[in-house]
Image (cartoon, rainbow, N blue to C red; front, side, top):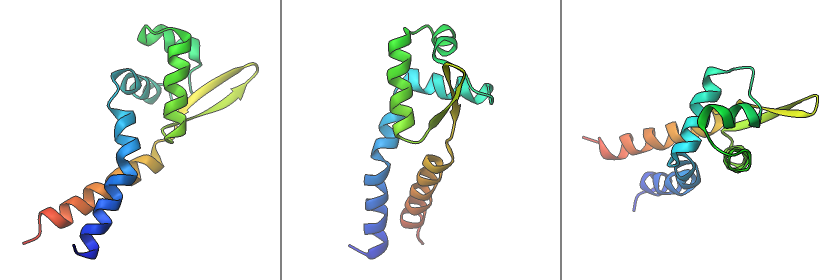
Length: 106
């Protein structure tokens, strides 16, 4: 196996958690909702918009935060969640570029 192929295989491994996070429709909905509200939303507001319980939303936000898709800012007693997708998207773009380089070689 070439060094370039090994690099792409490593990128696949590193992106598995990100891809796993993105397979859930509720997390997809949270990402898209937060994309529409740049100043952030609290758990209650997110729960109202996507019709999930507060604990379920909190769980999804925890998973999204661990993978780098969201972060939060404390405002008064509430946490307001915001998108921070730059790092995970850069990882995914790098994987795609590696796949293209390996699979579309002439």
